[in-house]
Amino acid sequence: MTFIVVSPLSRIAEMAVRHKARDMISLIAKEQAFHRPGVIAAKRHLTLAMNDIVFKGTGDLVAPDETHVRGIIDFAASWRQETPLLIHCWMGVSRSPAAALIAALSLAPDQSEETLARRLRAASPFATPNARLIEIGDALLGRSGRLVGAVRAIGRGADADGNAPFVLAIRDAACG
Image 1 (tube, rainbow, N blue to C red):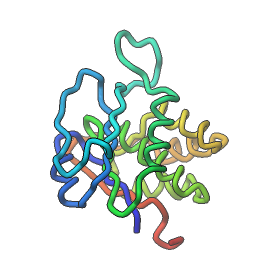
Image 2: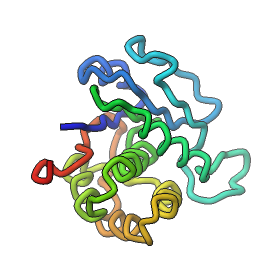
Image 3: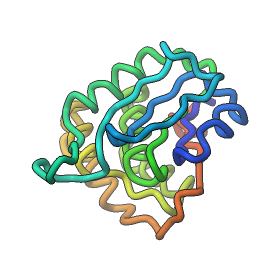
Image 4: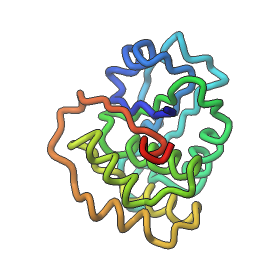
């Protein structure tokens, strides 16, 4: 089964090694310094500079935009799926779960948004996908508001300390 590992920044090296990930997407503030795990080749690593906000014009912060979401979709399409895709942000709670949902729907567009969102909630009681990323992803993937609605339906996740990586299957196990 193909899956995505969602992680906080503090645990990316551990998760990359544990799950044998060779592809990684980083959704991190432009000024945030970090080291790419050695098992991830530079050419298989996408860094998207953005803050975890939902409105444009919030001072010097960078709101997620269409370019970021297109980057997620394009990188997911180039992922060979032989090993898990590792997606991280600062805490692994908002930007990276949103990116995981977008990547999963872009790779398996025939699945139900509701089923995918429930699978996310089952995998992580803490995930609260970034609403701006979800809205843009919904539009770019032609989901007609269904992804936005599905994420709203699972509600806000429980408070988290940013130390709870999880695995999200691309497809429902029952569907192959």
